[in-house]
Length: 84
Image 1: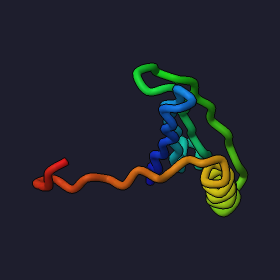
Image 2: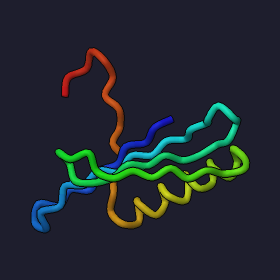
Image 3: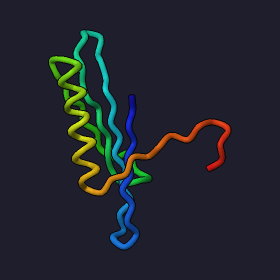
């Protein structure tokens, strides 16, 4: 599950993205991978590992709450066959 967020404010010359997803490695560890930056760049990324899937889901939920409080909006996926 990947969640993409945007924060755009032309008056502040702000055009940012934030993307997060739950991951699992070959050894069974669960984590949260996140990538952020300005649109048009690769941005930065970070991977945090947790002991259980529940902890990783809780961390993801906390991140979403923090970003929504800072003004980011969740970008909804566009279904195939629908116009932009």
